[in-house]
Length: 116
Image 1: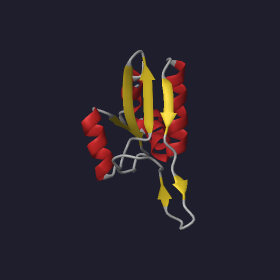
Image 2 (image 1 turned 90 degrees about the horizontal axis):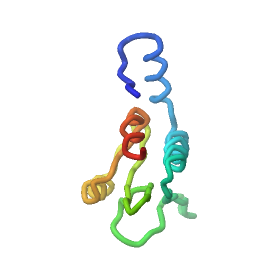
Image 3 (image 1 turned 90 degrees about the vertical axis):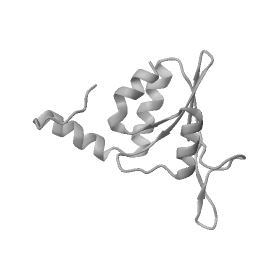
């Protein structure tokens, strides 16, 4: 799907919809697409500590991608972000090391191609 904004009313509506999509909404769509195409899916969920700080319990290098997809011996690491979400330096290092993906709602076409 091409989400290029050519100035027409339909493309403006699509652009507005992807811009307004929350990370939770985007994640739900990606997870459903992956499962429909036979991928095993794992998601690392953050928790809020009593101090009010958010963390994702794990052991190892910080920044491990939130999403792991596996099928037929292939493993894909991905970080899902809103249109304005920013990768941390640690997330960037993981995605680079693993040839992983950062997908935003506007990257739907790439996500679908990779998880096809």
